[in-house]
Image (cartoon, rainbow over all chains, first blue to last red; front, side, top):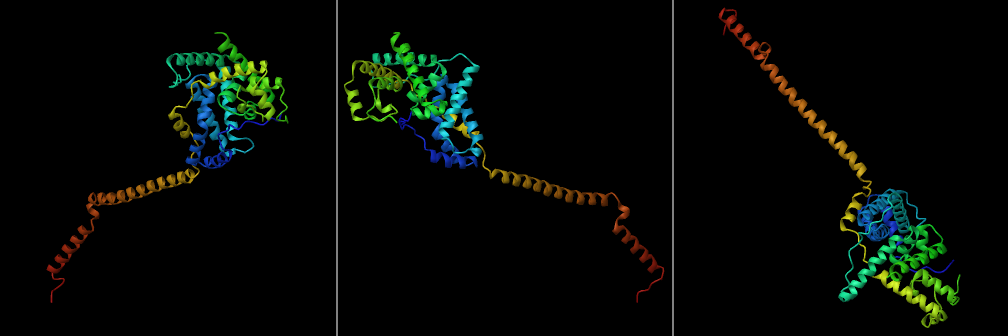
Length: 188
Length: 151
């Protein structure tokens, strides 16, 4: 399938490459730039996938530890960001294989000042149901949904991260969204 | 490559099912005919769009996820150190040994001088001035005995 990707990527591959070279030589500014550029999305991806802030922190640290080791050997065949997200997804998968239970102590409620108290309560309940539903999704469906619908990756990048075809990714997304709807909106 | 206006209703429903109700989030370029179809959709597509929009709104309302600030510092702490640290490390080692050697040499010199002083104090027989005094005494005795006259 050769349909065009959407263009929601926020990182800059050329900046990454320069910072990888300098960072491998120990340049603190370059290392800092890499962390600033990628930490928020790596952490968010991990947190959405595992549903637990402490575990997400551990996974994020491990991702960057691997990145630091990788810097001197980095070959620009793939985007650095794609590599980071792939490692994140794989570490989250390893986490689930070791530890089956999923905790749901994720994230403070989002306060929307424009909403009245009733609407706010309704949104909060919807969020809770959706988060529960997301964590009940099979691993690959959850990863596809989080990457595309929550973290704004293009279908092509998400497919690359998950190492699946674009068609397989689309199928995972369809199934994930169908289950979410059934869980979060049709049960109530 | 799918041409922009090739999307059947069935394909549009598939896209909605996978990527949501907002065509800007779809991985395709839409032609005018497709956009027109989406603006007045047939019932099945309209239903799919409405359901997807409800889910999209719910997903957009999920809490934001932001890393704790200390995580940034923790990660940077584990980053590789500068290569220039290696020669610096050698310099530190050399400088450290240099300082130790200098301190050792100073201690040795001080030890030697103290040792000599101590040795002199504890060995009066070898005092060169003691010998000189006895030589002077012998000389004076010799003079008194007339062996040597002042002129």
